[in-house]
Every structure is written in C-alpha cells, then in structure tokens.
Image 1 (cartoon, one colour):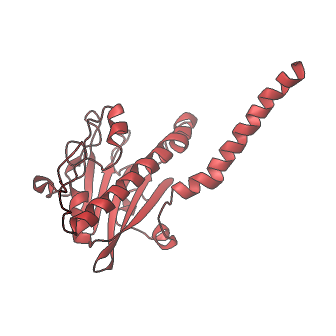
Image 2 (cartoon, rainbow, N blue to C red):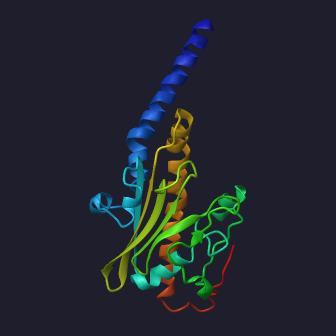
Image 3 (cartoon, rainbow, N blue to C red):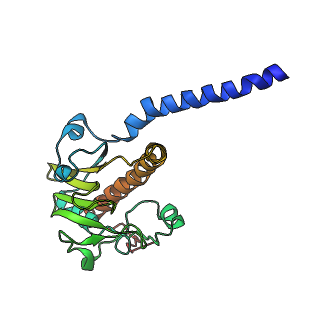
Amino acid sequence: MSLKKSWMPAAGLSAAALAAAGYWFWCRPRHLRWGATEAELQAVLPGDDLVPEAEHSATHAVTIEAPPEAVWPWLVQMGQGRGGFYSYACLENVLGCHMWNADRLLPELQHLRAGDPVQLHPQAPPMIAALVEPHQALVLATQSGEAEGAPDCTWGFYLYPLTVDSTRLVARCRWHEKLGIPAKVGDVLFWEPAHFVMERKMLLTVKHLAERSVRPALPGEVRLATG
C-alpha cells in the first residue's frame, strides 16, 4: 500500500506534464489559428501597428457565402448594449455582461465612427473603434490604464472578397503579455482558449446571419432580435 501511495504523486505529475505538453504543442497552435490560411496568418493587417510588439496574437477566419456589404452591417453593430457579440450570451451573462444577441440588423446602430466606444461589459472600460473602414476593416483597441499612449490590445475584423458572392472574414486579436507568472499562466490557460471558443461561435454566427440575409426568407421564418 505504501509503495502504491508513493507512486501516485509521481503518476499525477507525469499525467499533468503530458497534458500540459499536449496543450502547448498540439492544441494551442491550432486554436490560435483556427480557420486561417498561412497567407492570412503572415499578412500584416490594418491596425497591427497599434500594438507593434505584441507578444501574443490569435488569427481566426471563416468563409461566408455573401458579399462584404452583407457582412459588414453585422460587425458594425456589435457591442454590449448594442447588437451583442453573436457568441454564447449565457456564458457572458454569468460574468454580468447583460448581453443579448441580435439576429436582425438594427438601423440605429449602423453608424459607428472612429473614436466611438464599444462596450464589452457594463462595468469595464470600453474598447474604442480605432479604425472603421466600411465593408473592409473594423479594429477595436483597449488600454489597461497602466500606461498612457499606445493600446495594449487590438481586436480586428477584416473582410476580403473572394468572388462577387463570397467573403473571407478574418479576425485578429493582438495583445501584450501581462506581468507576473500567474497572469501569464492565466493568459495561456484561460484567456486564449476562452477567446477561441467565444470568437469561433461569433464568426460562425455572423456567417449564418450574413448568408441568411442574402437569401429570401423561408415560409414562416421570423427574424427578430433575440437574447
């Protein structure tokens, strides 16, 4: 019994080490680039220069069977207290975001300008629309408040036409590494996978909404803003 007990901590440590290695070398590289081509990963995108020496970057992408003009309106109305972020509102609301997701276009929210705030949480400082190029690029930026000047995080959305009826939607987040070992570990083990899960859902929902908007409504189909 004592021999068995002596092996248990070592076995647990070995299993944890293997899990950590598997996540670091297999899972993490894949979720940081979900859906993106090599060319999209290597591309310098508008707004990248706002965080020129970012230690972390995640680039995700999806193909949408709709032109950029049909995708852009869904992006420009994003935000807490606006059209939502088209992700898992139930999870966001556990954190007190008071989020709801629109499944129709809201005309009153189609006029975002550079410098306008975009809220993520009612109690948190908003991101700022740093770049607004209709039908092409929307870049949001935030600053931790620890230092004035350049943003410490950008979140960009880019539309690239493939054909007259299809678009690549590329999303890129760039941020500086936080100070301290616990914060760095939190970035890798919580923030990065959480960002991937939520943004993947967002991109797939925008794809669904944009593709639906360019086809006729099905018999009996209701298109309303929902929570």
